[in-house]
Figure 1 (tube, rainbow, N blue to C red):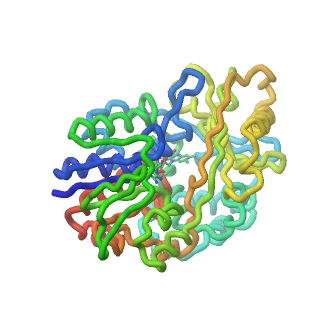
Figure 2: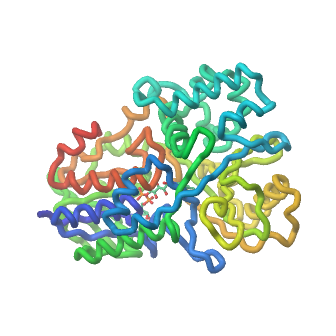
Figure 3: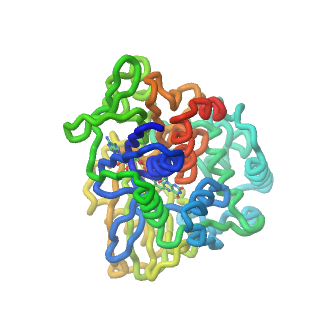
Length: 436
Ligand SMILES: Cc1cc2nc3c(=O)[nH]c(=O)nc-3n(C[C@H](O)[C@H](O)[C@H](O)COP(=O)(O)OP(=O)(O)OC[C@H]3O[C@@H](n4cnc5c(N)ncnc54)[C@H](O)[C@@H]3O)c2cc1C
């Protein structure tokens, strides 16, 4: 059995550590942050423990349920009926079921039928090989028509991906449509889940299981280098200290990889470096009144420069209204370096446009979370761009949230990949079976 080092204590790293311990390895996890959880980590928001970045669960998230079952916290999964709205040019519309679509006045009947059929067939589709080479914009225009793309999708892509908006893989957006579209109790009712106590409950249970099985978790421990000799991993450098390991599992975002692993070939480093990510500035607000009755509201309005809001308290039962306003953008965008106060002022101004009943005194608390690498940009043909998880350095596996493309980043896929990485320590064939 091997001495395994895991870099990163997000969902993927913790799942990898847990499964590696189960397989009998000795495991040490190194996390740069002072807390475990990565993108799913909680913080204290005005007395409430909540994720820095919103998290919902879909019925398709089976790896999460399987893991929660193993950890003895399956009963913490809570399901709620949720709804979606659209705000377009100053008007609110109900969205997300066939009746809402039929009543939607901004598209003609033919466009609505085309859109409805497209969404329905997308939830049934399994084969994504053709979509992988297709551009999302062209895919929507082909199925739904140019007008439907302009009304429903264009601004969502533009305000999430900016200069990359017209070059996103159709397979990537299809998996998102399918994951949310199949999380329903009927054709008319969306149903989403959350973990009681938030994602932290899963993180805490994983940490407890890791420590309980004799693993170690070092927080505030930034790995500066993965060392190797003659094509075989030898260990890590952490805070200037050299530590020996037989196997290393890295779950850090790909933009960090080439500096972290000097032993990779120039060609391999170039592959990691070519994977682009956009950042996020996520404004979290506690309000005295609800904004809408929906969990999510998509926005297509020239005076509001965000693609939507997430009214989290319409999913997780909370004592106050809690809303996330995510500003996705490449970190090179001039807005990314604005102050948190500017983001809060603008975001609250947007909420007041969405619901004019919100007054000056209704904003009770706010926080701003930032991530430089929050969302991989997966263009058509992305699969061919992805390096193998098992690198050319024996004993070193590397993955992050883009490796399970075409699935979007998500806790469920991260824990699934963590498990596969743990199993592959002893059996490289795991990745052949996965095709990665
Ligand atoms: C705004 C937003 C909304 C989201 N919404 C949802 C949702 O609704 N549902 C859902 O399922 N998922 C959602 N996700 C995605 C989900 O949070 C991620 O897929 C998942 O948490 C990723 O876990 P990970 O372990 O793969 O990566 P990460 O969480 O990024 O973990 C990587 C870890 O590596 C650490 N690290 C980096 N460099 C080093 C180093 N040199 N040494 C040591 N440690 C290092 C980092 O600090 C981090 O903790 C959302 C994400 C964001 C940003």
